[in-house]
Length: 485
Image (cartoon, rainbow, N blue to C red; front, side, top):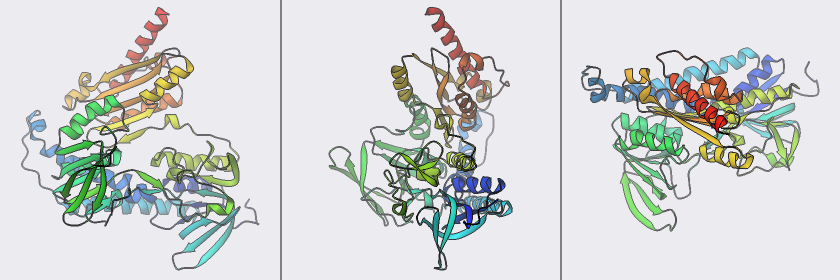
């Protein structure tokens, strides 16, 4: 039963995946819900992120496969020269976006969610303001508020963008043209995925990474094997420890490269286009958080593990935040999980989130995935808690399915405790790594032990046996360790 003092039981500001899941779950649970969105329904993931980029990766991946004469010859297949239509690939991505956005909007409407178009803001405790697209300003009284405003691409100082010759992933997903030579600033998952698309479609790529190694956010062992195939084996000139200190749009685009430490000018490049893939920043401007005294931390909204917004370390009553704006794990599925969890807590069903068991994936060809601790963090934990860290590696070149596909370059690295056998994390590079990681994520979530997991039977011949082999190796290592002690 809704409280008559309030216009809504819940208002969600932002209709990305976090906001969508929160609003849907709340409405289906009987709450009177409104969702505010100033741009397109579906937020970054549907319109400018995961969805269109995966459509481009799917199409360009087919082009790469058909153009790989050596790989096809291994099967005895000889294909004609590959032709593709850039516009039709772009249309495939755009159509997918429109379809998913439409489905998402209809789902909310069917659930009974009121969709409000405009810019939302906090107007004090249990009050939300909205400046509608037609200029009308309204204020609603609301029992609970969820902030789900997401994030925007980060453009470092010194870089000018024009959306055409110098652009971010927001524009890149439109695939409006194919530059002959493109520089990609950053070698995280966004930079790698677009390098995969552009090289498959015949573009020459220069990758510029400010940190001391390319792919700095990935496990070093995974980076070693992955960079050999995803960077060295392609038309990519990768440079690390170099800063793109100034970029001027135009024809050509002019890039000034400087030494990261000394800021001394090293070189000037002239390229056809630049993709700025230097991470993302929270979209908190205009939220009017000052009205309730909440201070952001590097722009992010501070929360606890139940999604409550914090002020001086204490929960603010009736205010919650989910998704990229919290800076926890900036992934669509994290936002969705946080959204549902926030509503569960609003409904008086206490739940907290386990970030350790949330997997991440990079959809290159082949893919990269991970879950749980990095090796560095696992070593720090082992030292702190006084246990020995177990590490095993399982290779795709020993897997029948990978060999049948002639795709046997791959590695899985499993981290576990040598005292209890608990799985701490995994890092995978290889065919369908994004699907394989889920099994380990489930094990991490359940705090399962390798000795139990090693007995689970996997289908033969499948790629999942790469995980089975790792579990068996870890179990053997654990039993040996326990015998010795």
